[in-house]
Amino acid sequence: MKKRGVGYGAFFYGTGYGNGFPDESRAVIEITSSGRFNLYVGVSDVGSGGISVMQQIAQETLKTDGELINIIWNDTSLVLDTGTAAASRQTYNTGNAVKIACEKMRDRINEVIGEKELKTKEDVNEIYNLFLDKNIETRFEGYFKATTSQVNLETGQGNPYWPYTFGIEKAVVEVDTETGKVDVLEIVAAYDAGKIVNPAQAEGQIIGGASMGIGYAIMEEVIVNKGSIKNRSFSDYIIPTSMDMPKVTTYFVEKNEPTGPYGAKGLGEPAMLPTAPAILNAIYNAVGIRLTEFPATCERVLAAIKEKEQRDQEKRDNI
Amino acid sequence: MESIIFHQPRYLGEAIQLLHETPNPALLAGGTDLIIDINKERKKVETVIDLSRIEVLKTITVNEIEIEIGSMVTFANLCENPIIKQEFFGLFLCAKHFAAPQIRNMATIGGNIINASAAADSVPVIMSLEGKFVFNSVEGERIICAVEYFSNYEKEKIKPHEVLTKIKLPRKGYLSGFYKLGKRNSLAIARINAAVSLKEKEGVVEKINIALGAVGRYPFRVTEIEKICVEKPLSYLESDEVLIGLETAVYESIKNRPTMPFKKEAVKGVYILALQSALGGELNG
Image 1 (cartoon, helix red, strand yellow):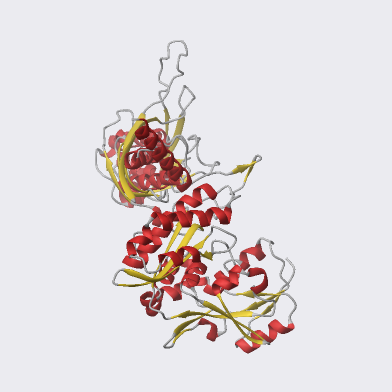
Image 2: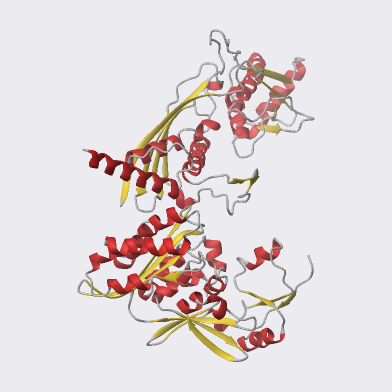
């Protein structure tokens, strides 16, 4: 028999290195004779979308078109240190550094032409020439350091992380009580990651996180034998396929984070946090079993169902 | 890697002659297992005979009494054939859920059979449909039913000079179904699979064939259980007698395996889903 259940998983997650570790980012913006800006930033991007985010923040701050900004990233002979693309920190930390650099540039632009937008290469070139005439710097550096402090181990006080991202997911599952198979039918996700800089990317991050969470919850398992991993390739380390993915609906609660660039916070790691707990809760809701070990494979689910049936039977017999 | 002698015959006769003359040739069908084994150096191969250019092996022909499926017919071809979908629904379901699209385009039904995996998806279906294998060699033709081939595998298995040319399925008008339990919904090796073919008249079972896979060295039919179902109402097929019979059959087959406690329970659910797909068309997933 197939039984359906609904479960929720909620989290809050501190982004950045945390606990007082120096969490620094740097960026440089430059105006050039070619009628474009160069943004030097050390954001590494393996599909996370960091580069687009930096370009968007620069574009907004400089009041110009994205096409007029070249991004130079990750060439260590050209860029300053922005720290790692880790800890869900790039949008918040490096985004702030980019914004600070671009604000310095825009302040000088405002001095020479006022609040006017820069729509074309000619507009930018004009500024460049004015900067040369007026002997203004053409290159500005931005630096940002997150406010985090070590926790006092005596009092438990301090700011170990800054800022926090919040979220909740709902999972609907179907459990086959005769085979132990779990299918995830629906995921609904609601996140507060501050202002969402790039909505399409953010939605993709949540869906990708959900797929990792589904793998974590029901199929992914490292099998170790005498210290050696047995399933070392994707032919035997199983991850979800499109046939295992349900529709994922995403909602963003864009609560302004006053210290973030345009109110933004990190979303990288948080995207996979609530999925697996939501699925295990949904399994409990469907068939009344509490699994305390991942993944919820057919074996584990079926064994737990049989165990519960036996327990229930014993209870009835005792009455 | 050492060099491999590669033959690509155009005609079946040519292939059979090559098989006769070549010591220890490897037959290349879809290559979804052989090529991986060669690349990973799990198998040492001196001569490969590629069957992919032999048109006659890639055809599906139908006559009054049976359908003949060439051994080089791919799982994608099986999905697309209207007669297979209409009359051999279990085989259609098996093909549709086989691996992933790229593999369905390459992998052949013959390769799936000859590889003789415990978890081969097509074998239980062919067994339940009373299918037969046709082997050819210079000595002529050898026809053997699928159940006999695997129950007596060491004696009956393909000989070094033979080639599997056809799979024959009788057109008996069975309602047939298939279900595979894998670790995920596609591109998964079966943990357990089950195929059911049956004939009923006014709600009474006239004949039923049940084959199970991945619960023993080779797939097998559970003939004892099949017998007790005959002349019973359809509802009997989901009765405790049948389910306990399946549990016992799996227990007996894999007593000493660590997966036994799980598989003897799960086989019941897998069988019921296969049965329901035979009686009621396709299920979700």
